[in-house]
Length: 443
Image 1 (cartoon, rainbow, N blue to C red):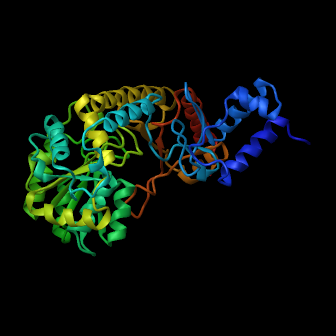
Image 2 (cartoon, rainbow, N blue to C red):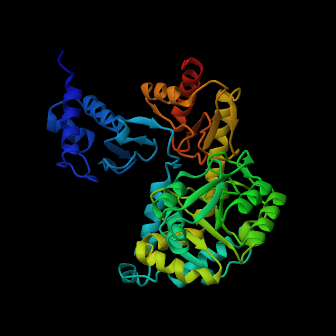
Image 3 (cartoon, helix red, strand yellow):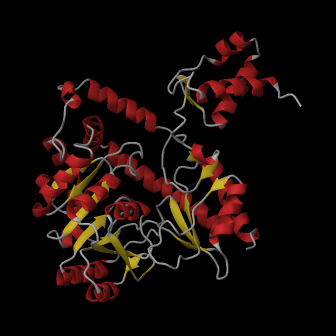
């Protein structure tokens, strides 16, 4: 059967994009101009462009036109993995907003009109430019107490911060305590550096200090890795008393505390951080990816002075320095209030998404932070995650089980749903599909 002409024309453009004849960023003709070039009706041209948008190959920007996407990147607002055949992606949490592109344009205009623009084209200090370290340090004071700029290093994202810690401060074969469910990115870094991770029991993402003490008495541990404020994947916030007990155990056994605060901005009023409670042994890791945009790879470390030299050497060996263009953008957004506005927007958006998630999936066993764009679904006894993940894939949705997060040999049966980047208009349908897959999948 012959395809309709609009699909044949869309296929022709798709082939040109895939083969590189239409490069990423190329502006396509207006709908009217395209209609005239191809001798089709204006409505047909519009239909072709909509088909290309559906395939994730172009993006229409209001007032600017239609542009070819980079095929290696997921669409801005949909979290559809191109490598997963266009599946709706509930694996990676990529929050975004329709106004983010305009914020970027305004930031770039501000930078372009600044003074020593040429300085951004040169090598930078390994730990970041002094005035930008000061801006970030001062912005952290309300949450972390006074942060000395000399103790803060700028990194190329939170993941790079974790890698910097692993490569700079640990030797192959050393051991680190973690939650039984933890951030997969830290597992990857530890595996690359040959570090052993030992799971410590807890409840709902909150580590049990007594269990940590038992692990320390059973083996030599160098550090403990924690996400105390908005745990990933469970969204929990560790209470102040438990933080205090963990500090006691860390001092007793001389542990470093690696405090990952990637999602901490989602919590309005957290207890005092480990950095504030035990600054002599805490390395605090932060990032702007979740609060601003995942493509802006900028983060920071705050560490005791005795560790700064080795951390600087690790930055030097991996990236030399964080890109000055990105650090200039982000610190400008800190100063003009854009970051604070973005964090507030992410919290509000996450809360709305959680309400919808609980409205549709609430009779399942859910664990989540009320402002987060992700949730953990515990499956009933006897149910397995793998068949449900397969069933979701058949329905056009990519989801994850517990294995990437687990540090125990026995992996719990659960689903992790990351929905921070799914367009709002699609979210109800996605949750309903997840529910149907869970209810109807038989092992």
